Image (cartoon, rainbow, N blue to C red; front, side, top):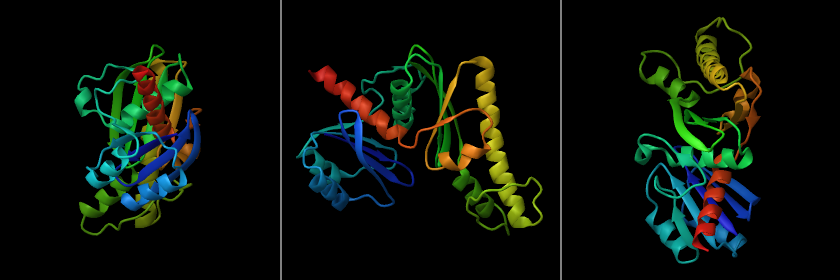
Length: 244
């Protein structure tokens, strides 16, 4: 069995796989050693573990894993089933790399745009030949709401909710209209620009806000909630194949 761990800016997501089949997944606001112990207690046959970490080191947790399984930390030079053409691979977010690997595994031989709508909104383009070139990074909903609170004198901090209006009749409605309509407008515009360049493009959306944006996006999209974890597992399987 394989264990994939994606430590993000806000949540840690984990999944257990038997080969390519996902058996279980969970998300933690605070991830620590006891969580790993519980996972191993539930799935004692875990033999291989891969971690993508954009937030910081977990030396005690990592030591626990190393004692029990073959352990891999996803790095910029880790072999993957994609051809990485990013100009500065050492600065590339590991979760971005994993999401692209997962997308290519799901839809091989296609032009793909992968949108991860989380703390940040990232856009990743990979072509039919599995060549990954990069994309874009933009503030996610939570960052936009927090910025309005932090950098103004009186605006309140709000959380996402659906809006069916453009003209806000009060401050709360105006903020929601600006942030929700503005962010969905950004995503729609970027999708449209990619489609003008690659007409057969398939658009995948993942991340914590993927389902939220689904009804706001005009172009056909495919929501894949655990794409990063799926991609991490594919990278783990790819490297296991290289070892044998």
